[in-house]
Image (tube, rainbow, N blue to C red; front, side, top):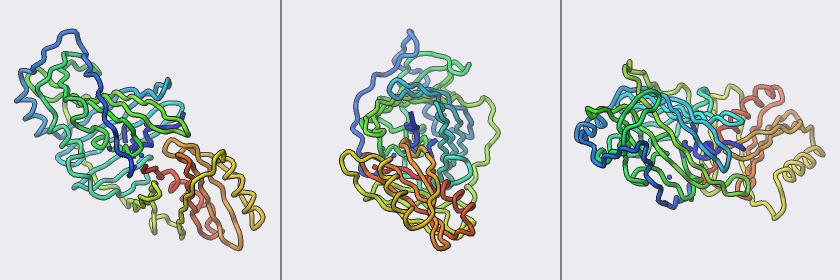
Length: 361
């Protein structure tokens, strides 16, 4: 089963946590039952005022992510970390299943950067107002006590915000463009004195993988370390340019001159005819190009939850790396073009470019 967090996207998604993403997709909210972690339920949290103040002045803090995500009958673990320092944040979310997929978001001075490997970063513009994690936590409800429970060895009160009152996914660095029927419930962990211990979320949505709609659920918690040294959350070095084709429904990162090799990138998309598969399209492209030049063997990838393939083509000193992926019966192609003298570096760069692609509808 391919990653579905990629449909959210660096990730670690966006309505990044959570299952790989989109302009043109408006989530339809449904109701999710409020979890009750203990049999002892005290509806009103006596330190509500103190907790509200603690949330508004939170930081610097660091905590590890722990949780699970289920896609159909396939259960995966969620790990990673969260660091906050004033208005800056760094979130690493890792989905571990048959493969491991990483999503990262760094926000500094309101500017958002995302990555899938902690090496290639894309500048995504200004983080939308109110969608950052510090603001999400500062606006959490602090009155409803769902009981006492222990997470990661820390015991605290689970303070609930009403279902779907706050959208957790963007605050976790995800782009849930492809999420359908999304519902999220935020909770905050607090001690007896009203001080923040951590936070968590329960989430569910539907997402199209291949040609089948999949049910996804995710539950995660982050408990903050008792003692935290202020973490330096810096702007990633040399971020790539984010290129988003809203009408076509996809986006990718372009290194430009930062790629270290002269190149150009072109893209195209088309609707697939009924019964045509991605294997048919790849074979047709390879067969056609083989009549004009030299074609390298195809290699597989998983991009934003979908199976994808790439191969190379050479003719008259020109080297191309071609990438093909199908999402919701639309075929997308990216082509990275350069000189045959740079083909080794060009292929490595092309794979990096391909790995940044996200669907936006």
